[in-house]
Amino acid sequence: MTKNTEKRSWLSRLLRDRRGNFGMMTALVFPVMLAAGGVAVDLTKMVMVKAELQDATDAAALAAASALANDGKTAAQAKEIGMRFLKSQMTTGGSVDAEGDQKEKDKDKNDFSSSTVIDIKETALANNSKSFQVDVATAYTLEFNPFTRLLGQKSIKMNAKSTAESGTAQKKSAISMYLVLDRSGSMSFKTDDIASQILPCQNWTESNWGKVVLPTVPCYTRKIAALKKAVASLVTVFNTLDPEQKYVRTGAISYNDDTQSESKLAWGTKGASDYVNALPEQPTGGTDSHEAFATAVAKIAPANKNKETEIGAHKDKNGQVPIKYIIFMTDGENTSYDGYASTSQAKKSDDETRASCVEARDAGVIVYTVAFMAPTRGQTLLRECATTPANYFQAENMTALIAAFKAIGESAAAMASRLTK
Image 1: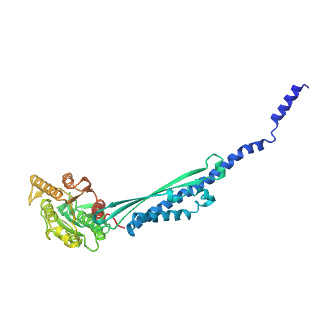
Image 2: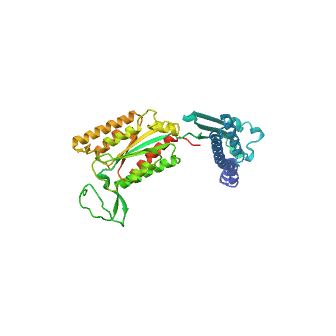
Image 3: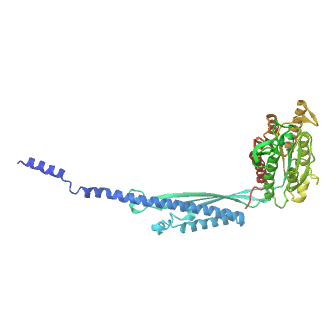
């Protein structure tokens, strides 16, 4: 056998020999396995540290905001309080100090005093009130374990940011509100809401109005009953806002083809509420809104400071100039003017009502309008009367009517009491 033949035979045996392959593969893969394990550990730690950072900035922002609003602290004092909360949260969180992350050599890298920024924005409001916005941002450098460092990455910088808002207690603003409510014959018509499945009642509709109608079951809720529930939802909001009856005054007037006596503007909601609850369960008559709305404007709009006006009443009671509102509600359209029913007279009522709406807006009165299952012409008048499109509500059932009055009350209450501690 020649030497070349022997060499080829030896090389062939070597290539076929599989002994030691596992050792070589292990030597190659083991560092990668270690690095992968290290990454898994550090990923878990990153999630934990991120959560602790966020909790710490949240606590710092809330603590500083609370100190400004509730304890009368200065901005500098609030920042100190926020920093103490942040450091306390981080040192007790469990992850930051683990595995030597804050060794002596890393002190500068993870010094929260230098890596945290607390910014406070203060805004002056009416009645010597203030609002505060506190922004807290911090950073933390997480050192990777030796196995993760095999991949060439030694550390990662993690950030967190939180914002909190607060404000000093603000005096409640005064409110005067006048309700202008339709109590015409169509308010006797049924809604689609069932009042009773047991007790029968006369279910009036536009088609059977004026005819002999026998009581039937189910008994449906009449529009007038729905209106009373809606006004009750408004009253509840105001009673919650002003339980001592120092800031809210309400009045009401109703109309069909005539204008009924009013419930004069008075402190609290009882007078207006009693007036609405006393409206007949089966209203009658046509529709003419011009005089009722004009009465509301005349009672609520005057801007002189005589005690007979709303400004005078509030000045004596709470020393404020009230925010003035009119709620104008109808379920139909005008059919007459001062007892004369015709298309031209109905248009005259529309025109004069519209003119009174303009007068109210010019006097700074906020007009809300609610069309309750109303026809197109009635809806159009109310849209034109509303101070803005957002002040117009169209309700096609009792639930929507109640929601509309509640929303109006909540909107007025929000303007009257913007901030609390």
